[in-house]
Image (tube, rainbow, N blue to C red; front, side, top):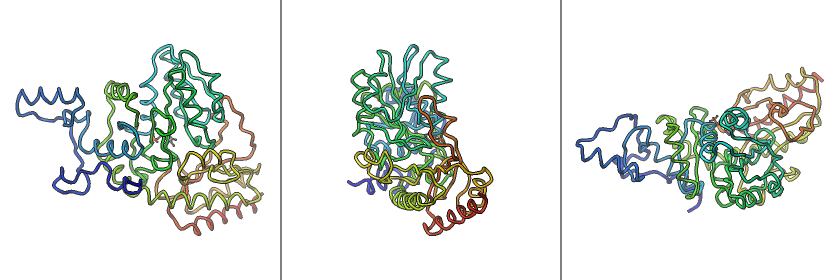
Length: 391
Ligand SMILES: *Cc1c(COP(=O)(O)O)cnc(C)c1O
């Protein structure tokens, strides 16, 4: 079955819900048992991971529907849900570390994931080392006997470096380290982590899976070998996700393949148009043939979503503000993956330790929404005209 078909059908069981196409939203904490025997059976079923509802936090048909769908589409053994993408990143890493361990995080990983290593994990005696995202098989030299986790993210947050995931995974596995990937940019459709050596894949479902900027959910999908520790940690940390947000995520999933096609096409066309503007230093988008990560992207990925960045040549701050402030279709804001276009100014120097950012001009990230491409280009064109007038 093709992915476009899977996103429509995976995890749906209308026969269980009187024919309802979508799973109902279960608002549950207590689940009542009619007898002692039933109570004891429920407890055993939960411990043995058999189907059934035991307590709200331990899973409901609403949550299980999304878990089942993501596991199937991403190609992993099983999935667990978290209340946000960051909670999923944290839960994934925490599942495979203990005091005295050393972990490696890509220098271009999502900023709050870096901070987890630097601040929270440091308190528990876990040492975090950042590495050059372009390191490839060279990661071998950084692996120590106590390295338990290697965190990868491709392309990198904000700066879109492509990583050679199979090479990094091969080196990590030779030393028995677990490879945790943040796969949010590609979604489960455009990169198949488990076919490339990843053990644990994280989605900020808040982004393309929800797709409408109105709910927060994270998912962690794992191989069979990685499953017991993930489940244990999820239970120990009392993790779950809100039923309404999970419902919105499974609803968003149904149209994700169709939406992504448009986000990807518009994003690439917009990137190409912006790259031609004389005030632009570089566009960071792995699907551009001129991008240094293009060969890896072509080899490993099945498509591109609608998120990329732009680096301007050094300009007066007023000129930069003139471009950003007058945009009508691109909201200024964090997050991405919704139906609407966004622009987010950033400075990568704030989230780098071992790689140097070579550009002096300002940078901003663009999320290409589902508006007509002509309108998105016209709005950006007006922005560049304002910039020129203010140079
Ligand atoms: C947004 C994002 C997250 C965090 O997701 P939230 O749901 O906002 O917590 C994690 N990783 C990446 C790459 C993201 O862009």
